Length: 630
Ligand SMILES: Nc1ncnc2c1ncn2[C@@H]1O[C@H](COP(=O)(O)OP(=O)(O)OP(=O)(O)O)[C@@H](O)[C@H]1O
Image (cartoon, rainbow, N blue to C red; front, side):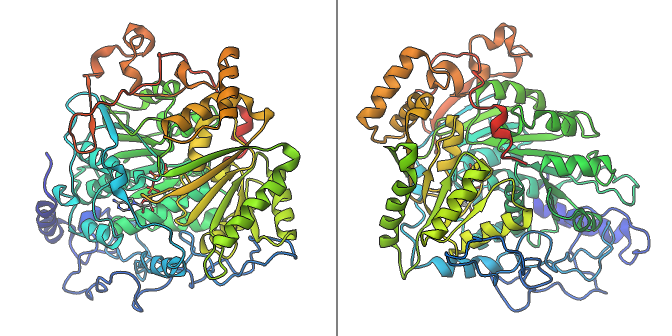
């Protein structure tokens, strides 16, 4: 039975006083998060709540970082070099700690929770003059929303309407979130209602908070009634958030730590390429929410250092990517073949900006009686991104890029260039373009799978701070990364899959801001002509006449990357007429109809789907793509 946050705090006080025995620290018993962090008479009061930075808190970038001496930025002498002043601000390597010092698994009694908001203001200040537009969430107000499933909980209009708890509400304020984005309006009540969810919403529209808030709130209030098993070196998180790349996992961890600040909910990250010992130590200190990449998690499970038997919440970010051919076996192993509770016992949330129907079908194995939510058109980009396509021969790409960068440099403020993210096909291509840019006086760095994790993180930091304003990347940076001031995404090499294009251009135009995306197109990309032209039309972009001609030719030839052929999950696959004829693997009893409306719940005239239902073409989910990922 759901209880309010206030009720559970009162109950917690009674329980804490009664059964746990405040001073009983010798035997590590599990203390639920909602009972932690509460000062007792014998303990000093917790540090005062300080919004943003303050001298009281340790700065994670300063304490014991590994950043110094790691040459992760541009490596070529001719270009300006990175500076290393930022140190390592990534997760877990600072000298931070946790102020849960009353039992549980926590053996580190001296650890205090680092203020995760401290770095934000500093970073924001550096860019304050460069900002082109303010946050414009009004741009999302009349966005079409489609939900389907049984008894869909109604959306909310404000955070105040939801009982997320005082501490979480305070953190929402610290994040300067004034009102929920459309995906948050719909997804949060659904998840708080205990329902499984498959949610599709445009890039940069706030999906991270949409799955983090209900998890944190649920853990704060949860009376899960089950004790952690006695396995001294095995961490038993209550929630698992999986994402496809190390950098994205780090980012989710940083975000989740802000949302969970002073709530008593502990968030830990585990990802490959970084020393496992540090992650093991963090896990030993206790974990409520584990954010992880699949490879490192499998390692931890096989070493029996993590058990999933207490999992109440499972969230897959970039869920379609997590379930495509590259990751599916690992995800099945984690979710179905270890000790995680089954669907219906745990609560499962899948989020992405793209959801091909075949992947939806696969994903339904992981869900029970779920609600499908589409905010905006599935697989579309936001209208806030101005998309341009230019015909550029391979041999002319570099000089063309230089023209774009020169134009941008002219628009820079105080000698600082706007951030530009350049996507290329291969790791070699990334290194070679970085070298060429640096030689020509454009400070650039790279991120791709052949660089060490330290180099990758340093490159990202240097780019984010504006010290190296050009980042040349493979698809490893295509999804999820939230870099606030990316003004321009250049598809130097177009991807082979339109979904990848959607994610790549989504690195700009985030959180209601505008952005620019330029793609270089030539004969090698003819299979992309049709989907690109369709996508641009749907986003109200100007489609060049030459591209329309290419697209028309591709239609004749029946190019495989076509939107009309069902490549895109335009809506819930359960609504396809052939789903109930056996193909859907479960009959019609868990689809209870759907409704479409705008973000405020009013009826809208959104036409929905992308053409006739059809099979998944396989598109670009081939082996070549997987190499760029963790
Ligand atoms: N309610 C809100 N008000 C203001 N800003 C918000 C709100 N919710 C999220 N944001 C900000 O919007 C930005 C984008 O959010 P987020 O990274 O969660 O997007 P996303 O939908 O997951 O994108 P992607 O599909 O690329 O992964 C972040 O900087 C986040 O802090």
